[in-house]
Length: 251
Image 1 (cartoon, rainbow, N blue to C red):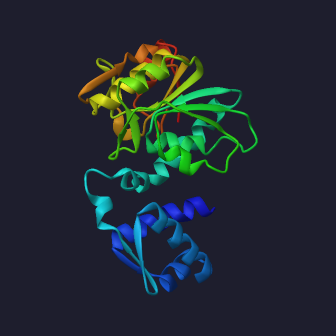
Image 2 (image 1 turned 90 degrees about the horizontal axis):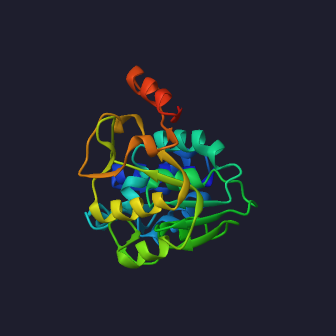
Image 3 (image 1 turned 30 degrees about the horizontal axis):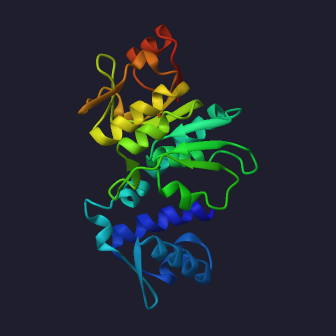
């Protein structure tokens, strides 16, 4: 699929810093014209700079204040695995509220085109990603964070309180039986906490590295989570805890 190829091309260019059209054409078994169109799309995103015969990685993307695209390509296979496993949770959900994480972005791609689903989100990247889709997207509004390509602040929190949704789809930085669901960014955590209050059910998307990890801010008690979707089978202690507390563990 073209979206998957674009993500892998980003990863290739970031690693190599400079690539040629012919090299990418052979690597991904597509025509050079297809690669040129892909590079044009990446240049429009600000990820690469086109040069004669190829492209170079845009060093500005590596700065701390703009790193959403870097996160997008990190652990992509794990994120896609989680997204595939979360697809079943999205069936029959007409209203979903989401954070601005890259894992959640992958999960939203699992919603079949043509379904009438309303997404409330503080992500700004979601508008670019789904501009051609049938999804009805509502922005929270708020202050723009260039680092996470998300909207934050009091306006966002006030607007979120207007909506009641079927499902909250969020990610996190850490999971602890004792401390709950944790995140590292306080401003983003405040938005997520407000989202969780508006949802009938909560689905947490977390790869295996997040289990038994702590972070700065507590988002929610684990017992308030309905689903945990991950990419690998967690330890027996986690399987037992989820079973005892009515949490559906999907892996």
